[in-house]
Length: 125
Length: 385
Picture 1 (cartoon, helix red, strand yellow):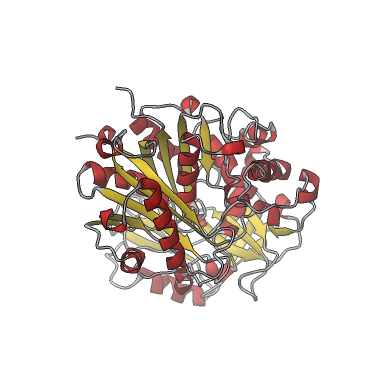
Picture 2 (tube, chains in turn green, red; picture 1 turned 60 degrees about the vertical axis):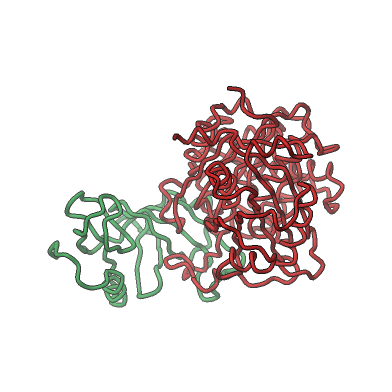
């Protein structure tokens, strides 16, 4: 993808890609930082030179909690913060019965749809 | 002009509290008015003296406007910064600024909530937090729980140490007869409760109540004529971190590092000069984090510090001498109650909860889930120059 000035809504582009199972991150071609969720201006250097690329979807758990009562009845009860390999952090749900205190640092992969992000353990081959 | 001109520029001369543990069916504006009336009586002023209004809340579209209309005032200076519960600590600095500049002469800082009884729905329900709400993450509990889990992992902070924060709050609360009596649970009993959001049980989380507070500030010059001992604003600082917990630069070090540095710089003071602390305690991890990040102990040592008993009655570093929001009042935004308790301590009116020789007090407010921080330092006399 080229580093054009963005003429559409980065949020819409990202959501449409997620509907197809694709997780797009942005990289700033001026300062090279990685950005998620999508923005119009680079939050690091302020320039409008963000371009999309597809994430590896691999990362590690930074923190996890298990809600006794989820605020979203359909969501799996574990909420995790995942630091992706590309250096951005996002939130997702994990369906696991493992205790929370053993989850930090575990390797995971994320899978997306338009309005959910699921996190599963990445098993080394 | 530099920011250090605000040091000692203004003082609190009136405080009013109302509506807790219960507002008895009064709505939030009625409780705002009740607290205001008490503060005005305390300051020996009338409603028509108020020409500066500093307020926000969780339920009005334009809180400053709703409160001004309800009270019947037309302030010439207003401030409605909404950064969570820390907003009110920020207002102390903001009021000092406005009073120093002559933009108003009598500043009313006020908050009221009926969150315990009438449970007016918060206006934030109209904005489910994108990239967070869809995961069933209740705001702010989920984000704070994640931060606590990270702190435990990185520094070895334990659930037992979190329970010590709740235990200390209970012991201070027992010294405040206007607080309702609470079951005297041991640390072990607290640890046995089921998790609400790992690592928090119900004992780690403040439970919603009604409540209202009002503080009246004037310029230092005008304060000299007040009938009550003025409590002087010495320094303040505010820092903004994140809206979503995933956007926090660190889960384990908060923006209190920045807000504290700014407040101590304005006051020309250091942590070892503070006699009494009021630290936002919506969740037990907060005092641990803020003791570290404000410089009262090394990073990662907050858990052992609270476990030592230092923050409890009789300890060398009294924290939350009114019982905190864990045990006294937790009406959705707690920040102004930190200021009210600081003033009570520095006026030496805290009775059994009085800290001996309290001359300087620090209040520190959190907003959101570690989203914002604001620190204010107060003294019982003008700064010595």
